[in-house]
Image (cartoon, rainbow, N blue to C red; front, side, top):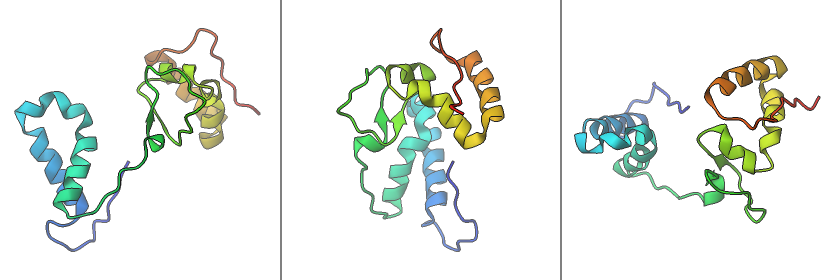
Length: 133
């Protein structure tokens, strides 16, 4: 989730407005239809360039893609990137997911969330909720 102040008084240089405009332009380009799922991700750097905002590329360990990769103890990832829980199970953090989530939102809400997750995502057959408490 990204938020922008609405009380900024500027023309086309406000990043939120430029990002939205960039997204609309890409979205309406029929040749890009297959890329729509990632529209927000590739329109942001374009909007930054259009706004003359200098950017720095963060190292891969700040958005480390673990999909279809086995655990590598040499990797010191800060943020793990995945689409679906099944990719977490090859990493040591997988069994800790329920404990981490419950520490953030509480056990009752975490338990409800996992009921929904299990309807839509593959979990190991031996997966159990572990709130660590």
